[in-house]
Image (cartoon, rainbow, N blue to C red; front, side, top):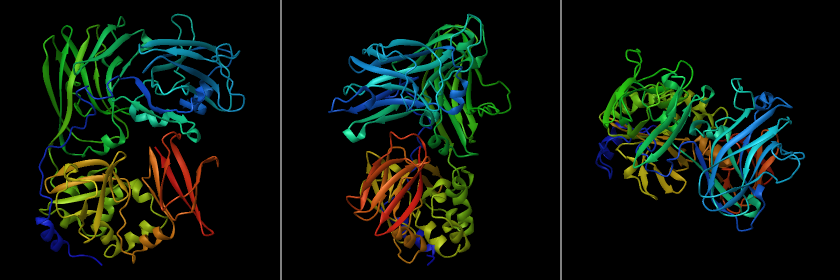
Length: 569
């Protein structure tokens, strides 16, 4: 039954939570360059547990080549694989490029002379392998280090055709060889021999250096005392600003944290070896490359640096794109430049939590539902409110037909579902504690869980926290919260099958079902990638080493089988 909104808003106004007007966190990751991810262009394969002393190939950091990448290889031509590498301690790794499956033909060592093995130390080294290209139906590049527990790091990976000086080497065969975070999960993955108890994970970095190496430009980057220093520039062509870039690619969570139409300020400190102009860019990465810092192209985002440290601030209006980046571009001369203390902060919060929802590209379904249930005016009131806001993907993960049924009954179950996502008080992420129960406006509690895997509201993970409005706060979650009312059609449907969360998943996939149920995870090719019997009514599957994409999880129990699509991101 629909609950009177004004009653709960008044009743919970004096609840345990009070309105907290703390400033919103910066949108930038690691803007002071002091966190653990401060080496742009590198990936660290770490947290290796390998008590069995397994084979090289039992810990792999791979790129599975797409058909386009394979088609770009010219059989019979000579190519060169280049990369940098180092290790937590002296370590051997095997480097593989060739056939994935079949004979596992390694083009880097076709005669099996040294099996592609190289020796790493704690010092950064550069490596190169020349090879004659061949193509196979399936191909991969792999850096394999399963002999011991030592971590190892790979940087700046490239495969280019060998050509005469002045000739065009063509496109790099490797995708995202600088390990940009936005595309990382689409291009690289860790694979381990988990059946032997081997574990490993990959840590990428928050910033990266990009430059037009095809023009002969050379540039280096070091991080020191909270400064990112772009130095030792050799830019004899005198190229464009954008031919030397120090960038942060925005993740989906960062983009989801931008409130369209809201006012923001980018702040940073900068200096140069000598007087220098740089171009500052924040906006669309690709497409029309719309720069939000200078949408009218009045000054093209150009600022003047000197040898003296200066502080800069640039105001802009929030807008979102499918791909976004922040870049400090300085390709006009050989002068080095340094960046520090980068932040993007919200100036004035939107008036209401409804404004955040309706302007978000992640919440079109939720916005439609709030309007259909006639809750816009109520949630635009004085508040304060906390809204746990499921994404469009979360609604899409509901069983077929359920969302349509809810929208067809806006005054009934839809309203109950929405009120179960709202608290009539302000609960910032700093207010939440593990095991805490919060009473929603449906007069039912949600449970807060905080562990090493993240922050969860019931079974939904908080993927963006603390989007502030004048009348409350919005937390973005990756699943729809289901009220514990057995009369609701969603609860019946859920109880009759099983529950999977979070979906999409990047690390572990949790399954709630009956003890003894047979659980199978299948890829789109029909191959079984996980199979087990539920030891209890709640199990967890490790999907961190699986390639990103669509999978199907099947649960068979008491003669019935139910299948659901899941996404590994």
